[in-house]
Length: 110
Image (cartoon, helix red, strand yellow):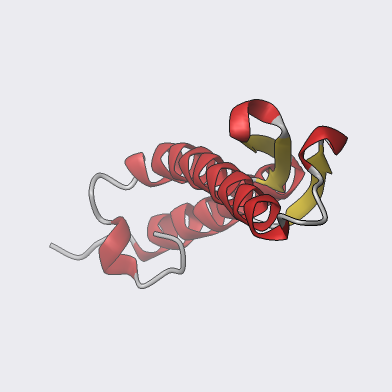
């Protein structure tokens, strides 16, 4: 039995459009990660780009820069993890429609 090539092409075009829409949503989405009880906050887009860092002046100590550096790294890591979860959620919803075929298509992100 031959697969319906026209139908497959249409489905592939729809998936490509949905994938582009999800990528745009991820680029527009912003998530936060904090460290040190909220004294350092990092904001990252859903596609992983660092947007901003906010540092409470109370943690700025010229004699202890290492702690501040560690807090910044921890906040960025937390925000990146949130971004990864958002991306997984959105991409998971898209690939769920593939009936488990996503990995076999060789498409980036699937």
